[in-house]
Image (cartoon, rainbow, N blue to C red):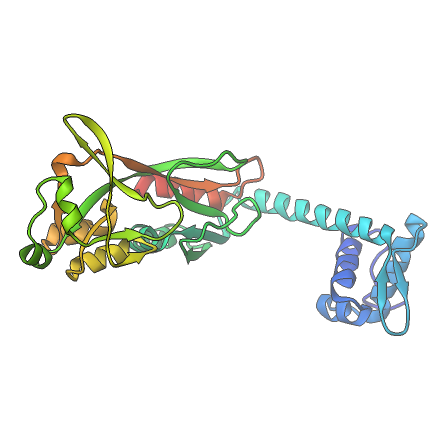
Length: 300
């Protein structure tokens, strides 16, 4: 008997072997992946078929073809192995949180607010490998594209859990050099004579909101440059290219340094976007996810 042949009672290992064969397309490739000989892999599949009384794979000299019964068994095998991995991870997580944690955050907020915290988080939880992706594209958390996503604005109805991290106030800013050249807008209507920089993505407001004694109203603004994130608009405003309305977090340092000046604050409607961490909850939520979300709530 092959020294590396599998015990007939090792059904979990048999599931792994069958999934490897179906994925690799051959006994030899699956064997290399698992550290088994092709004959050991073949005998394992034979034992599964004998136990079930059905043919799972059609063998030829050139290829393996999976049958309808084989496809059904493959789906079940993958589900069982995934459940087993999650159960083992949940038990392992009863100790120190560990494992790879995939985080998705927007370009500006991620760079300015999340990334500066990661050193502290890693020092506190060295067994967690943080894999962060900064993008303004919304990733699908439910589909497994990330473990935690940081989202701005109203959240759509979904099966995801959410924890509130704070809110994002808006502010209109320009550089002292721009204002010296073009003048200080005193009322919202003055913006018609200025180069107003705006966002270019779909959820961007086509107008800027204001509040005065008569109530709230929105005004269309126009400019020569649009961008997909507030940090870029703030940078353009700082360079003197025009006036921008952006999240206060993205220009807080520039306002404090005097390189950007808040404008029309008397007319600021006080609108804010709520910021949430979203993730897949439930009884099998890994401890590393819960730990990171709790950390964000604490620090943000």
